[in-house]
Every structure is written in structure tokens, then in C-alpha cells.
Image 1 (cartoon, rainbow, N blue to C red):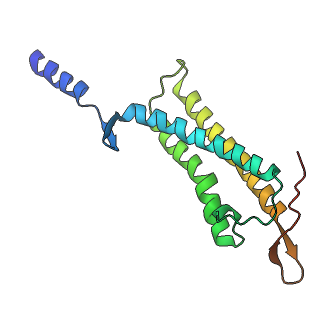
Image 2 (tube, rainbow, N blue to C red; image 1 turned 120 degrees about the vertical axis):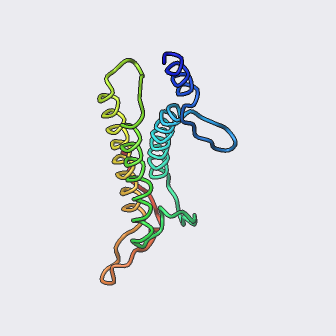
Length: 156
């Protein structure tokens, strides 16, 4: 009986769950940790990018970027994918990954990651809102959006 338990135990240790992408095999545990790190890094990068974009003086912006479209559909889709989805992904993945970092309790790491993701999303949304407010102005009475020519935004 001991021999069977040892064999089963060794097979369980050897056959850990793996994730394969681009021909490379990754253990599930490290994939979750690195995935969380990548999502948080992209959120912070995006926040810095939006903040810098807002500070630039731009005339006649002719970039095809969904974040600059004026209708509500693209704005909603952009907001959901850029601000809400990363928080949902982190909130889903973090509790399912065993984070054995710094020997802190699991709940504190889960809470910290979710709060950091939420904070980055809110700050990025604030920057996006400032960009939209700075680029468009309401023209009465049709209430159509029109790109401003000066595009000078106040410095924070």
C-alpha cells in the first residue's frame, strides 16, 4: 500500500497543471502570478500614457484610436475594455492563485492587488475623462461634439 501511495504522490507532483502558449509550456501557478503582474503593469503604463497624452498640445488630431471617437458606442466599448476588464480579470485570477510572496497572508495580497488594479483603473478613467472634456465641446443647440482647434489643456 505504501508503494502505491508513493507512486501516486510522485505522479501528482510530476503532472502539475500547465499552460502552453506560443510553443512554450508554463506552470499554471507561475502563469497566474506573472499574468497579474502583466495586467497591473499594463494598467500603470496606460495611465502614464493617458496622462502624458492629455498634457500635450495637439491640433487637428487625426489618429484613428477608439479612445478619441466621439460617439457613445466606441467610448463605452473603450471604457469597458480599458478600465473595467482589467479589474475584473485581476479580481478573478488573484484569489485563485497561491501567492507566496513576502510571506504575507493570502487575503492581504489579494486585497492589495485588487485595490491597486482598481486605483489604476480609476486614475486612468479620470485622465481619459479630462482628454474627452478637453478635446470636445458642446455646440448649442444641436449638442454635437466638435473638435477644438486650440487643444490647449490646463496643466495640473
